[in-house]
Length: 287
Image (cartoon, rainbow, N blue to C red):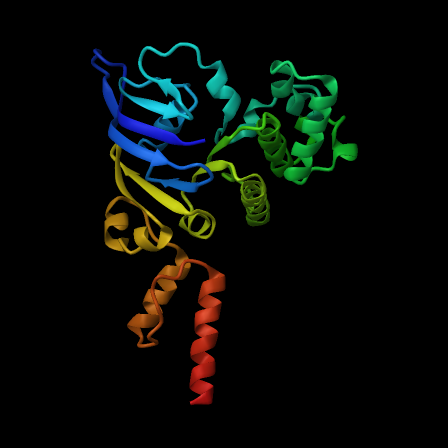
């Protein structure tokens, strides 16, 4: 399910003394099945952009085309679009409201008019995908669960809709490292298993570097950089000027180079760094 954005501009409170331009002439394409990372400092326009992709916001100028569905300033009927684009907000557990975990996850599929059997299948599948045990949790109140479990329930509610595009706005904010790694791992597995398009908004350069196929960097309402992690993180100086950074492991490799170790600097994950460093050590031992 492809996304094409053409000359997208969004102005909040247009024509008032509080007018603010959040997006300026955005042009962007995202292909079917891509795993895209969207990064930028607070106020760069990330959240405004993703809210256009399922019609929560409409363009002031320009158009968005999602799998042939056109969104512009005059678009009104967006029901079909929202069936296929799932949006998980930051702290999604704040959106939980039903009495049981089962009812909360089933809410979206019920609104699609699905059969009881299909709803049950979707709830079971979604809970399994996010690592929640169906039998022990289905009848519990979501408000009795841990923060990480509530986050999984909220994500499962979106997954149960079976979207073709999954957009996640800081899905691991506030979680401990273990909970963060588990949820991100499940998102990656979901992407690999079903081949859907995933857009991940995150402030963690390390998470972005190890998960995504392509990075889009936003700054002051515009797209500043786009490319693979290797291409984007080469621009360390520009990223720092935008209030961003590079993965910690990349910073370490740069420091090692400054001390004469001669290691490649386009390393973004611990696994890559481990392999390179071991090769260096073994080479010196065998020399």
